Image (cartoon, rainbow, N blue to C red; front, side, top):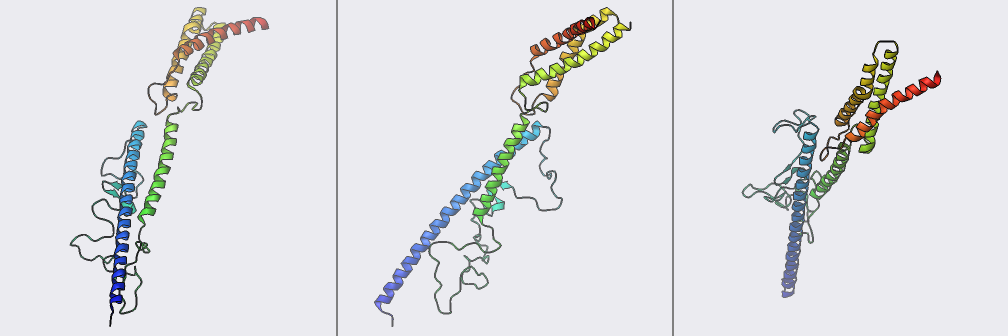
Length: 287
């Protein structure tokens, strides 16, 4: 026959169970709030990454695919990768603030989960006691996920690592896009000087060809001096200007990069006449 002490012990045991259940419920609620906050933050981050990638693709002439059309490289008929939605990330197994993951919808009946039917032998989430024993709640926490289920925290951590990697690669792409294709490691002035010197060098070679043609009588001195003092320097300057505009401009840059036209005029309009004067001095020294 049960005594008063037995009833008091049972009451203390039930009170301890209730406090443990409340603590477990509070812990689980806090964990879910943290997961939802992490999902929302990661969703905003991925949305910003997608917008930046769209801007880069538009800049380099590769616009994003229209809505409803799969991205290039996606397998036809295969499962598409999970994308962030307005309520959260489907890849991590944590739904939005509507209904917590793993709990049945109101009126949907039992789903077969451990929380829905803790005493069913096919669930296997809790150890089964011997017949006649009262099933007690596990104090201090929630059982670990069963095999085959996704851990939301682990999936969020994996998604965060991939987002960090995407940020790192995106920064590398932006740094590469801010460099021109022509002499990317050089400064703007050094690049312009090299281009104008190269174009002036081609003009000097053409001037030497004209000098040889003038020596055999195929070209008059007036035409030679005109091309030497104005024609070839102007052509060299225009060629260097166009080369800097085509291959010396980065794909992503704020404003127009300088092409140093005064430097080009100084180099091109002095290189050809000075080369001709040097040719005359050398010819007279040889003679």
